[in-house]
Length: 127
Image (cartoon, rainbow, N blue to C red; front, side, top):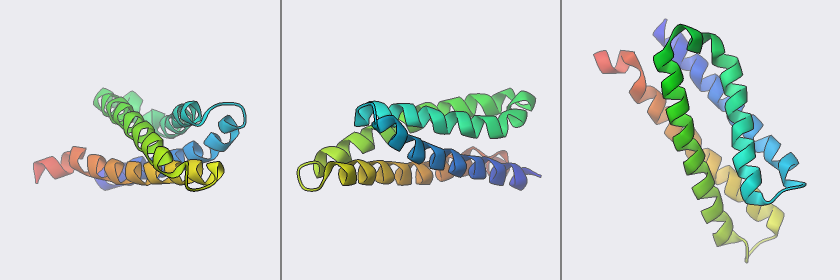
């Protein structure tokens, strides 16, 4: 039972990250890269939350963990995106720099989400 919940959270996380990545392209048509990264993160978070809202209504601790992890994830994604973009912006085309920076940041997010979900799992703490 616990394993299914863990898989459900990770699947929702991956779909949210995909929505995050794709929505940045739409936002960047009208906004700066930095603001696009921030707004696209919220699109991904809302997507993941909508997939998991039934789990949150049953467990208030899960909602707190979700919000906490997403605040940390937003900061991480923003900082890594801006840093990688700053490193690349003078060496490659702007579109490539933006996409690469955002991909690297989301790749880091996938890794930290996996680690945080696995460490926060009640099954892991009992063992």
